[in-house]
Length: 286
Image (cartoon, rainbow, N blue to C red; front, side):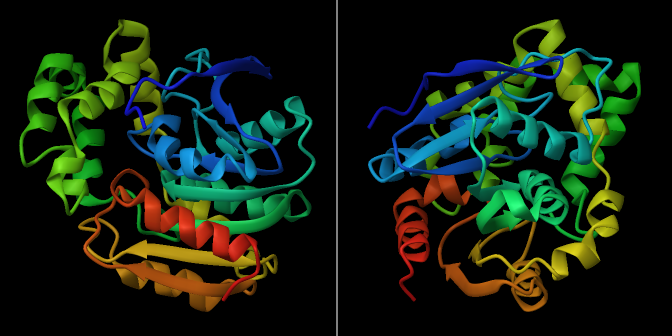
């Protein structure tokens, strides 16, 4: 299975041109990525599910190859409305929603506000309640606020060197061999290779705020559609306790799975196990 690139399509949603992966046939699944990734994160999972399901993975506003004005709202409520518009544009009435990292905030808001559009809900190592931003991201936000320091986090070459080190993306996995130079380049390409991409990424980064997930926390607790929580045990940013909290509090939560020896970027590192859990859950296996 090729690592990259992935073939993306484009669809207009409001005033944005959303880049997305669309593979397979069958009941639809919408995959939502987080920070600082793109739909590329889901390619290995999609490769294992597309024979059974229609797998659609959009790039969020400000990330990936999605084209959107800098004047638009990049907050998580706006991202959730983009998902609704994306489904409308693809003529998808209801779908399974699967979300990771900051995409979890987007998915949670979507599920809370549009439960009638959700068939099943799966969250993995994601933002929830008041657990965002984590200290590492908070530092990036501080650097991005001021032009005198923003250049540090906007330099493609500095970021490439940093992410090739043990302190970069490799912190997000247990098995460091999963993060190759090819994979690093594809994660960085959409957010660092042009001035416009850097500016969109900065808007996304600075829009992060836990108040949005706190505002819908009660509605999320009442969400009663079939829900599964899957958590990588070695996540250095979002520990397993957050997954357990989601499982304990979401009314529709039916299954809680912990994958050992895996880090935050679970779809990148352990796609085989994650895909199998998804298939089992959607087919009704316990």
